[in-house]
Image (cartoon, rainbow, N blue to C red):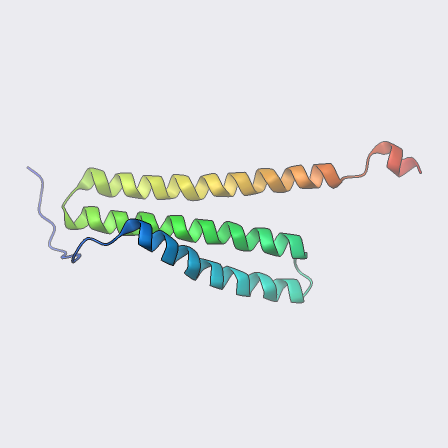
Length: 119
C-alpha cells in the first residue's frame, strides 16, 4: 500500500511552461553574472556567452524536473517523483558534459602546433 503524503502541492502545474520560465529566470541571472565577469576581464566574451547559454539550459531543466517532481509528489507517485528527479539530474549532468567537451575541443583546436611554435 502506498503511503499518503500530507503535503498538498496544489493543482498540477505545466511542466513545459515551467521549463521555459526556469530557463528565462536562469538566463537572466547567468547573463548578468557572466557580463560582470566579462567586464572584470575574468571571462572572454565567447566564454561568457557559452556559460550563460549553458546555465540557461540547465535552469530550464532543473525547473521543469522540479515541477514534474512536485506534481508526482501531489499524486503520491514515488516512481514519478524519483523519475522526474533522475531526468533532471541526468539532463543537467549531460549539458555540463557537453559544455566541457566543447570547451576542451575549442582549446585543443586553438592550441599552437609545433610548426607554428617554430616560426
